[in-house]
Image (cartoon, rainbow, N blue to C red; front, top):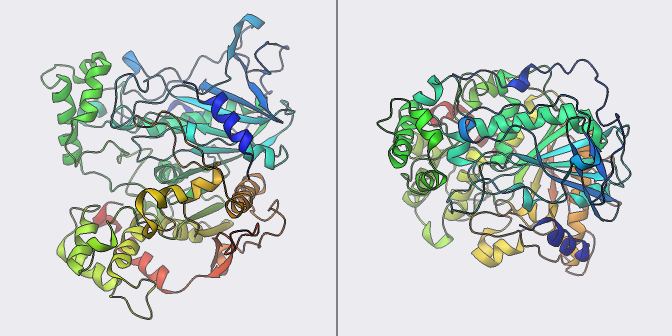
Length: 571
């Protein structure tokens, strides 16, 4: 069994309770600054202390060989007049600190306000970092850093469901892991002409929070033992979609605040048109009572938390608060930017789950005709014209001996999956010109199977169950804290294999370097294959059935079709 005691201990200890470039984009990372934390030794009875020069934090060292620092703010609190404002840098000027100034960082910070929202659950002051370090790390350790961006559609979930203490422990202290929180939903992504026109507000603040966190890491991670030149960013679902948006930021960057990326089931909704964005913005101002205000942004900033919660929960079903094209950080539709080569080229580890679309298209009994397939797809792309739905049915023909699907439901599942979750990884990995590794996750999450049915297979988020100690979701408005499951022997073996691969990539840009003993070797994506991560067929075996598989020609052809209609879909 996988560290069952450590899982329970972790849960007990850590789960109590007018756009311009963001300030961070102008940081000069070509010069090497003296590491912070060297001006004097501070101590605390609470735990080990990291001194950042402007603040000092006491960590939680109760887990063997790993120290956790949680709830560390990386921007000014986005409250009051900073609500709907791009992230503002903290005052990080050097201060003379004493032991009395040490802040308790032994636990997580509060959740961000979720969607649906519940009064009393979540806070606007939630943009914080959580850091796991080897307990023997010093400011001179220069360890690689892995930064995780949680998913949840940009509107729910939290970093707290993705503990990375095992990543640090199993790498024998070979890396530092970071999980960040960022503004979600309405508070993170509200957009509209009034937001854009106001010089102190702007769209995409949740995404810019992530960027601000990456810049904070550049300035401060050395004090924790990290190397700012060896940062890998990663995420799943909308977290993976965020990683993709950071790759295309500003149309590509020569000097981004990361050197590599992990993309798991990359997911972003189609970008809204300006008219639809205004419709959704108008609903918010009406719900809050600001639709007649002379200064709408000022009115929204004065609104009570209760009014914001009401606006979150009372919106048209077609309104989501997610990233929008802003002409700057998101300069255009992602498909266009990738096709034009306007993205940051870095080494990539990217993939998707074998049945990534299964939980989105209904049950097998609900999809038996071509019309049922189109209905399922239109839930995702409501504006799809008949010409494209007809073309979709040609691209995904009826089941035959040459198709990977055998039923109408599987046909719909593949179409949905590849439109959003399963083509980005292949495409980005094969056009970057940098080392790239692709995978397909074939192991189901037993909790999802128990809740939804065996038909879901290796569904969306399944890999998170293995990468993060038997959970695949953080706390939200409906879940008080993460729920961990004890692994079976085959699950434990695959979890160890996967964590070793992912952390090896973060450490060396190659999943093979520090792979678990006996693991199959990854071939690069350029060789035309991908790693299949799979459980052992023997329930008593500790040897996963993972291995490389060739990429068949039909998959790239279907992905090419989705790219060809990317502009129409606003993907």
